[in-house]
Length: 290
Length: 255
Image (spheres, rainbow over the protein chains, first blue to last red):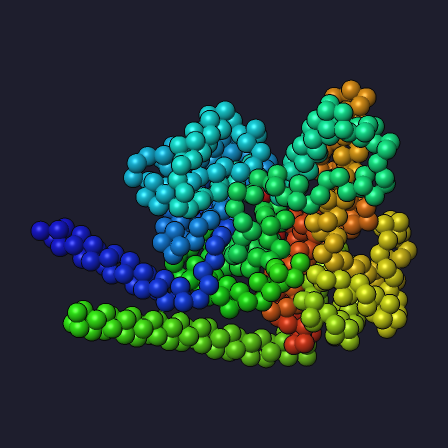
């Protein structure tokens, strides 16, 4: 009887909290709501140390925090969420740690494809962005399966950056742009209208310097599946970007909060969005200028 | 019919009152946030006063060893206040910072380069060749001026350089693809097009919002980004505090 009573109180409390949250979203929606929020999930290891947990449990707690944050974002109508799950720099960690992170990732990716997961509840399409060739075979296969399984979802987008680095992304985009241009020129040449472009002898110097345009590079960026982020939230108080979305964050509000990632909650998201709304007009003006 | 019309009118009225109520709540919410920031600003002014008057001992001895390169992002409207920029540079010189990069999106600071250099004695403009000149390091402060065109557009120009190499390698039918498109090669290409400065350790943003406004992406991988408020309300104490906090940061670089 007692247990029943307690669980009933819990149920009422949870529903009340959800109701309050929905009301807050309603009020916030009077102002601009960001279209794309990016998260740097920093502080899992520090959390584990702080709570005296075994190493590795911090990341599991971080995953739970991620699920709540995604729920809040999608409830509020944020269409694109991007998270920094694993950086190319993180491969430098101890092999056991990297392996346990990979195992955790594989487990959670497979969990995402289940029926009652958040992905299906909110119609989320999942992308895995980064140099996936650096991942081990089982993780890469799980990621590709998840991408195919959710390809038809169209209400929201979740971009998970694994084996990702902004500088790596830029180099990769430049490489793909060059390859594409090469094919274009080869085709022109083959059909006889290239005028020997391949030899580069007949082009004017100016034209030669302008063969690859900015737009060619930008469409080959991994993160081109989403528009530029509106807010970039980094937890655990660090003020750097750590090679994440450097190219896309030109007009993005960078929010840094001292809380550790597993401890992040609704109030931090609320504060970030309030700040975003305060500065939205200025950032939009800047974005339109160039 | 009348009843239905009346009901529709009533519904619309209720919806309008509801909307008005929401807007009022939103406004009150933002008013509270603004009040909070106002109070925070007051606290900062007081703190800055204590720091500049030397009362806070921990800020007295700044260890500038870690701060090799400092970058400053200024909102383009505020960049027209050249006197403020010069004052900021003079403070930095007094603190002992040796390399500074001034960035603003539209290139206003680049155009005021002459005016700034005139007022600042003992400064030289950063050039690639001087990087290894130790003698200059000691006495002069090196300034670099950057704008939006040194960011994304520079990468496009560098891409064209790499493309030219790619074409030649394809023509000579050697399989060198893996060796042309690497990070060091792009860095070199950026340097060749004139946008290859060093990576700043600390980036101070003087503007209404914490946003790097398109500072060359290639260079801010591990840069600490700190928001200092608007240029016209800049304070010496806040500058010292920002630099001090930077010296306390410990980076893992992913490990």
